[in-house]
Length: 343
Image (cartoon, rainbow, N blue to C red; front, side):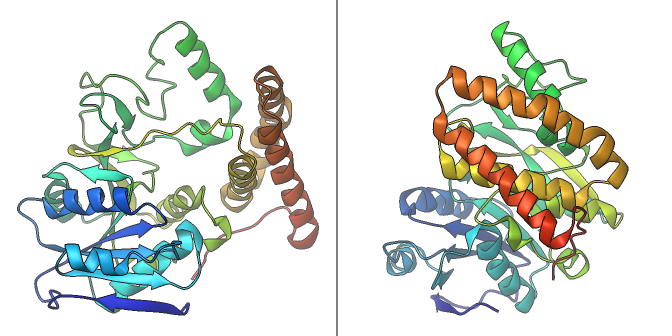
């Protein structure tokens, strides 16, 4: 267990709270406060909130516990990244015997019925380990940010998805449902994703999880730190053990919309490094050799180069190739194929 500083205010509510909402904070106290307020407004459900601060420049502990009663706060001595910070919260939940965990981004906020709908779904679906809400773009009432994901491989590993998505965007058309495995991103909500159904990936922005699943599949893999792909990797491990993941459309929240194509070296480096690491840890060898690698070499890389040169994104290009270089060096040390079962 990492060395952390723990502050807690209020009475112990574990005798009636089955759910622990874990919010990871790093230098964004304003957004974290908005997130906490939205959770405190939940109806018909009892739960506790834990804020894990990843060593923000300004310690937010006093501000949080003075404004909100019965909030648990863990202040890390270092920034352990998304996976590491959340793992500390998960450890807290396991140690204190919470039945369910809500992993919730600090730049998200919840509809008043979100938690009650997720809890109801968990009670009626004992074969399901992870549940996800419908997520709208921050500040909108009907623009979808995510509505589950029916194929993380097609959505995140293959250039074909990006090519079709951009072509449809140029024509101001919706992506055909057959190809839209990202489930309506930036589309107006017209009821196209209003059915509760099994999915293969629920984005880490909002995951409602049975706590005991972590004892079976392990915690979040901290090798994906500081961020990126740890949520996909976790869902892949959940499915491999025979559990289901479900999308619950009447559970609703909002999330800040941010572009992943900015001219940012660090973001591009970690996204590229981690997506390749994700493939090496989770893809079948034949899929990796016959589908992913040819697609990445002959479609993804040329697409990135053309876009980077057209928009003069030198830092992004450097980050992408640094991420590839990191994986090539790692292959020499550990081999090409990896299997991920972190504890």
